[in-house]
Image (cartoon, rainbow, N blue to C red; front, side, top):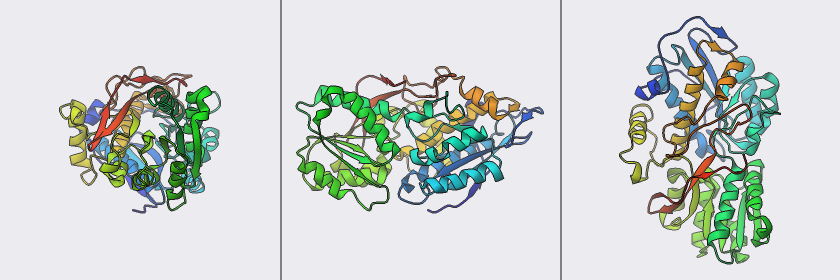
Length: 406
């Protein structure tokens, strides 16, 4: 689905009330993008192009703000959410963000997606002093308040995740010979750097490291190279389309390595199912949110509320797509950040509130994982739990693992 520009005003529910919406308000102090009646938020997302599988994130965020507005908005102010299609192209992201900041005059940007795309607007947002909040990328660079005080991440950082996989391989795979597929950009390199750090003096266990470009049609040749190198472990650092292709090709070749796939491609609906459930049994990833397809959460209050929201505000979406959970959780945090601003809806106060969370519970995060931030801590979520794919869902195992790079 190609979307060039979408502006959303709309709905909420009891979950929105839990996020802190009220109907009381008073005249306040405002920067661009805020008034007594409205808060404007900007967003970019690939609704088209090679990473269009991530478009579900933007649609879920849209549905969340619809829910918020239905119950009175944030402190009585309706959210005007403006989401633009950047096609996962950094130059297009720059164009979209300039429009959002200079023409639409948004108060802040929220969950703009992609490492390379966010890198392209990183300096601009900080020069303009516009909050670039809860970035939809786990690159470690989003946690650098000293140099980029207006940019904050959301999910666990890629380097830490890479370290965790490396250490798990070393502790569980005898005579590991590792093959790595990596998207050739900052996103892939961040995972790769963390993975090398985790291997330490065992870096020589990587027998083959291959890359691909986002505009390539397939990664079949790369997977053939990894199998040819006689690797018995496969670390899949790829976005959804290519991650699914890689896992299918591994099966087609009759190659049977121990497989790890990065969290950004752990969605049952957009990756594991297209790859073929028979082809992905036993694959390992790192999780920080509840998977709606996991029966262990069936009676959990978070999942019940999530399903109710999906049914009312996002009925065409599939429960198996983790992008919906991502959009839901990050929007809950954004709504709470704005609620805490009260009637002082300035960009500086938005950042002040974003830096003030301590063990804050966000619905659909795994039990034991909370949000904490501070003036020198721009990594809101710093823990994951490993999971192994079994049947048609992820099966969690082991303990909650804290981030080591923060």
